[in-house]
Image 1 (tube, rainbow, N blue to C red):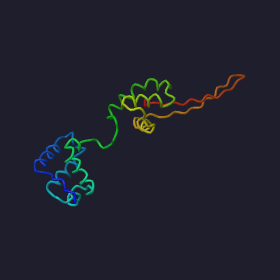
Image 2 (tube, helix red, strand yellow):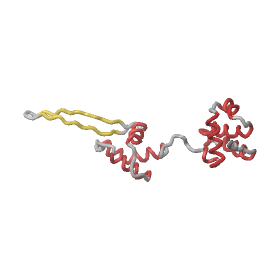
Image 3 (cartoon, rainbow, N blue to C red):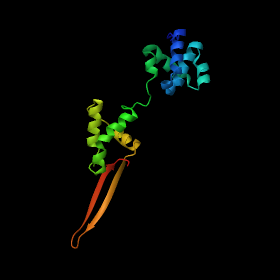
Image 4 (cartoon, rainbow, N blue to C red):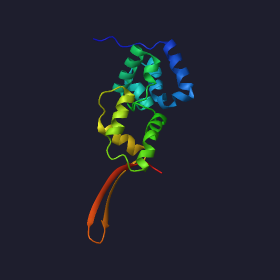
Length: 162
């Protein structure tokens, strides 16, 4: 049988101090669950108090014991950049997009991959990023008619919010 992780009084104090800090507010429930696990040995009791599933409490305690407090303070959204960094990244493409010069995502995708230090970036990440920040895909059909020739021009491009 596996030996359960032990949360000491010292650990509980560290966790409570972290809970009091304003910047840790998004992680309060996780910190509280691990701190309460130091008081109660049963995950179901801690789960009843915090509203967190017992299996997740066990995983949080394991993460804390193996990797320390900072491992619990990681943002769970699994994104590569903060929202501010995303806005700054997209700002470099805004002027070209307003002129209708961004016809495909390949330029943005390559720049994103380079910034993240990757060889390849999934297109879905770029679609998500653009839509999240209000960019829209514009698809227009314009009919031009001169006396003798009539042609249809199709234009499509990505457009940032104004």
